[in-house]
Image 1 (cartoon, rainbow, N blue to C red):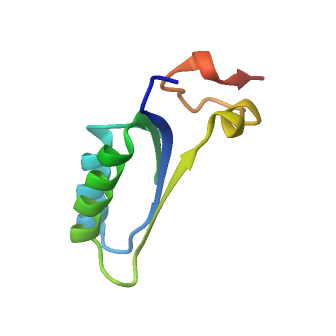
Image 2: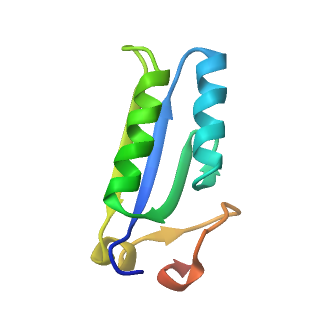
Amino acid sequence: MARGTHLYVFAYDIERDRARARVAKLLENELVRVQKSVFEGRMTPTAARRIAKKIGREIAPTDSLRVYAVTAQGIDASLSIGAAPIGEKSAFLLF
């Protein structure tokens, strides 16, 4: 992993179509979409917080956003099965 960066996973559940589309567009500019409402990518903690704050301004109190930082040990234990794109293959074990 690049120094000072982590693998982040952003997952959301947003009811309103318009807000969901705005959040998806914001995340598509920064990360790789791996499911309809799940994105991942490498970035600094500061960048992850910046994106999360932007999303927070777009969503309603009944919506949710989860942001997970994956440690190097977590990456070593992770698997990817299927056709979901991987942003950076070198740190993953693919079956």
